[in-house]
Image (cartoon, rainbow, N blue to C red; front, side, top):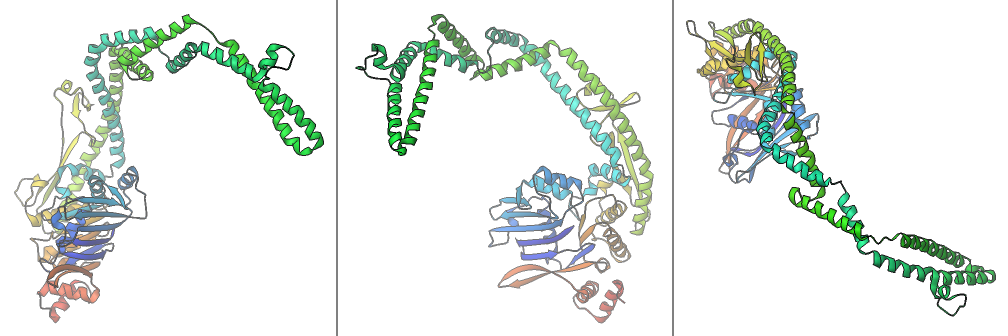
Length: 583
């Protein structure tokens, strides 16, 4: 339900905050006071398009914010999860429209596209007015209403799951069919490229390994000379090369050993040399290990001109492949894998198509059976819903109404022309199918004796539209899961006894939905659970619309005003009390 609606700097409204209640919420006020402005502002947070004209003169932006109790609708919850919006006990829809015409939408303070706001709004509110696009007058909504009336959700879900699988298979079939010509055209090219790449047979990571080996071979002489000199400096020294005399320079290792021996002598005299003696010994050990590595490396250095030429040739082949098929060796390998799959598919195309057709036929059998069960159940509901709607219309003053549900199926005379589109088979006939089944459903109505039934969408009388909609909503109240119904002056063209019946119908609806209604009729206002008065005033040469919740005394006076006009008399007050059941 809608808990509160805050409107700032919208048209004539400077700032209002309305706290709605469950049940029937009634808005009344003089013509032009701003009642419909409030409904227009509500439409804004339900995803209707906006222009800068709605921004109050002198303001930078208009803001509308609605706080809703968390809906039981799984579709709403799924939308919030899909858009990574946190589920809370309440959630907030907000819309901001700047004077420059820019619009921003928020759900729980998270910015969202207008399409998401509208999609959420479609699952929360059904707004009805004299000229608004009414959901019940859209034929595409009728099939869902019929399913909900008959509690066919499970059957519809079973069918939809199978239809989605079938559609996915058809999508794969279309993709594969479109590829057939392309694959045939490119088969020779792919074969040539595969042979060219396989002739080199590159391996992932090979290029960097070869480049490293090339660098070593190209510098083998330098490496040999440098490691030899380094070994001599660290370990052999001139003394080792010249014999046992000590006249030449000594190696680093010899000097460290000599220093260690001297430090050992000093440590025997002064223990403070103990630590540095150990460090010197460690340094000698490290130099020893280093010289072993250098000696081992030096002994393995290879002078191999043949291997050097092989690497250069191999790298040249890889470079050529990279120029032809991609910027890196990995790209070349990925391209080979891709064209390999495409070539294999071209070689085995008929077999792939055959397998896919088998899957399609199996799933079509499942989908067809589910579609038949769903269609049969729908046809069983037609008489029940027709009688119920006519009974409600009789209560609302349309005594001779006829209501029918037309269910049609589209038989495919040439199924081969639909080979790439999902369809089902019942008996010997093939039927066009959609996510809703094989049925095309539309409500038909006649409101006067002797008249032919016509599509509900073509019923033109404003007063009749109001009552037809109320009758349908009453019948479908338990099935229709939209938590909020909004009626904007749908009582035009009715009065007296009919108005009283419409009020009762709205009151009945409010047992299943929160209802917000704008009315000029006391017969309807008298049924309110919560009554608001919309008023217009002038302050500092500016016109503003405000709204306030009425207490019981004010409610009686407002209903009396609707009965008698501007001058409220004691008799009109008594009439209001009687109408409201307060006596």
